[in-house]
Image (spheres, one colour):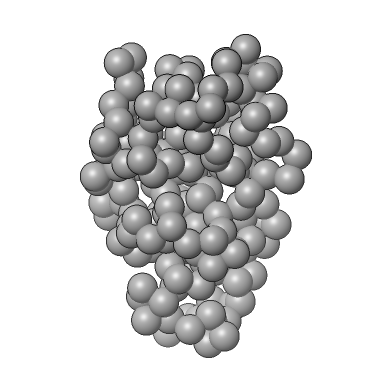
Length: 183
């Protein structure tokens, strides 16, 4: 099951409130586990200007404003920028399915100068799974998977991303059951 660059859509009845109605961009998936960023849960505690100030990054008139997202419960003090491939960090950008993921400070400096990516999502923390864990959660009806779309990741309001990801599969959220069926 190849899941790099796919979206995970949390099923109702997920059981973990941190992931309820989550849409997660999977940045890495292998036999060693998986790592992804929640793209539809804005942080209520932190804003982009505060992050730049904490990191002593100068805010310029050309600075873009980004919403800050809860990327997942692992390493919540660490920032990740999921972005369009019109930007590549001079230090390191991971390319995944036509998107870039940069976790180095230079991407925030470039965004503050107005030289960052055209489209981006800033996430604090990430979602992580050990070997076989994500596959087991999918098999237990915890997640649906779909192809990624720029509209879902970057363009829609956060409150609409979960429903739009489901709609890309032809699924009406009202028709979903919180319990897994057994054939």
